[in-house]
Amino acid sequence: MARPGKLASLVPLVAMAALAGGTYWLLQSSLPPAKQSAEQPKRHTADYFADNFSVSELDTTGTTQYRLTAKSMVHYEDDENSDLTLPAMRMFQPQKPQVTATAERGTVNSDVSIVDLYDHARILRAPGYGDPQMQADSQHFRVLVNDDVIETEKPVRLQRGPSVMTANGMNYNNVTREMKLYGNVRGAIAASDINGGSSK
Image 1 (cartoon, rainbow, N blue to C red):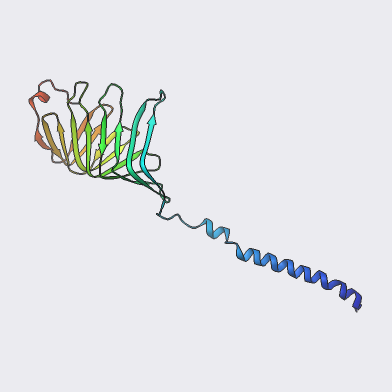
Image 2 (image 1 turned 90 degrees about the horizontal axis):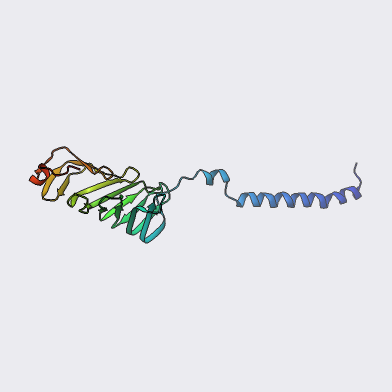
């Protein structure tokens, strides 16, 4: 049988152990579970904004290859895509006319390799280097930046100098300046394009 003196000496130790255990329990219960917070999916909510947005890509010599601007930009955290207001995409090729793509709204992916233009979208190639001005209008254009290609699956109206064409889809390669029209293609080709005019 333990003596009263020994019991008295154990009381402070038991009290300290109980206090330490209670403090640890309170601390753990107040912290959010690490596993639960890690499993929470990202939401499609805007995480930052920009006005008068502008981004450019340069080649190895420091020359601008393309420039994307917009009146405003809203970025979303889940897919890292951005919504654009009044976007304008300008593409520059050495010894070739400048090409500008505009629309009322657009989207751009996280690495700025795909730009979608919606609502009164327009592609305008300036005249020069043996080609007249070219203009294409549609409700949607997709700019594949790395390939320097513009395409649409929507009805498109194309005007190249005096020639006017309509089609159900289009693919334009800005490197080769080749234009492909798909679907119900109709229009009138000017004599200057038939007799010696460039088809590219």
